[in-house]
Picture 1: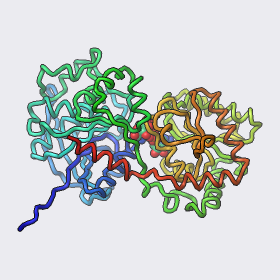
Picture 2: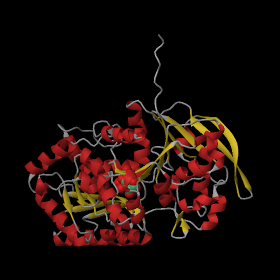
Picture 3: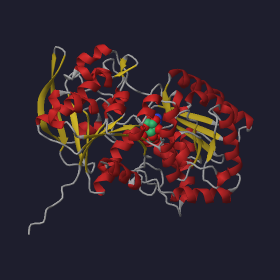
Picture 4: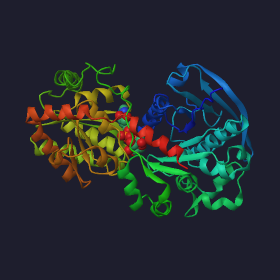
Length: 477
Ligand code: ADP
Ligand code: GLC
């Protein structure tokens, strides 16, 4: 008897970011890692993203697997789908290139962003339909791919894909991609009776569309999903209405990329046993680079200078924690974003150069060095759907100080209740500075610091469990 071989489930992750191809934030880390872990669990996961003029794209080999056209209003755009030849990421990577639209240097920030994202989604579905590729699941990440669940069901050109399961993941509900109804002209033909799926308060809202049309949707932590039911930038009622499809699945981290024992970006590698020595060496290196005294505790912040991250509070936090402790600590900030925050921090650097240093810009290499060399990592976030920084910090033996919100709630328990980090409730600088002082006290006890370091380095934040949870969702009837 011939044994029937069970074909693996085919999942396409659709996203505009994926590490190491193009990264702006945590979305890239998640989309870069999740498919790798799903493959280990027997799912044939692949990533489809726009083509960018970036080093990873230039440095690898590709084959053209599709060459076709899409139409937007009176324009005809060429669509090329390029597959990375050697699956160097551990899964198939497809780049969608549309000369004139998807062929740029950056991921975000262009005036025609809405048109770009519509074209990306249109092109992906056009390619799959034309080539008769019918995956089991289309997993859409954030609003940039939020129109896909609608297009699959209500665009006659994609009839072939009708019924394919669509999963939507909300990495950040603050961004919804709303656009004027005029932009509907840029969409592939759709059943006009179904316009209501696109609309939210008189505008096209791709995140709302994703929630309405997908089979299931997730937020990147249970804590954040609970918050979205109360406040979701105007979508809370919709989320309540669609509650049966809502799930919270916490992100993991790629423990192969983020491993202090093998991380090539560190000054010195270390593991739990050698953490004290290793962290000291990395701290001395960092402090030397930034002209800070390595004998003082080092607090760090890494991230986008945006309101959600509480970055506007950083100047106040820096000033107050240094003056109120009479300079008993050092603070190092790496980030960029809001120019006003950047300028205020630059001025503070002049005033507090003994205890405060900063580096503006996006620097992957330096971020790893900071996770390794800092004693504490600050996350004063107003909103934090999951947050990866706190998990990277813990893996590198750095104690997180976080505001109790979203995914930070789910990952950082406070020392006062048997946990291993410090958290505080109110999003102002008063509470942040108070937590910083509590950490200073903790730093005074070498024994307690070493103990905590061991505990956090041992915590399991790997993707295994969450990758499984997604697969369960893919299979849900
Ligand atoms: P978000 O995606 O909202 O920015 P996350 O905590 O999910 O927040 O992920 C942020 C990711 O971006 C982490 O990998 C972090 O190390 C990285 N990162 C943020 N800012 C910088 C920066 N200026 N330089 C290097 N890496 C950064
Ligand atoms: C978003 C969120 C962040 C989350 C990341 C990955 O950028 O702001 O909290 O960790 O997505 O899911």
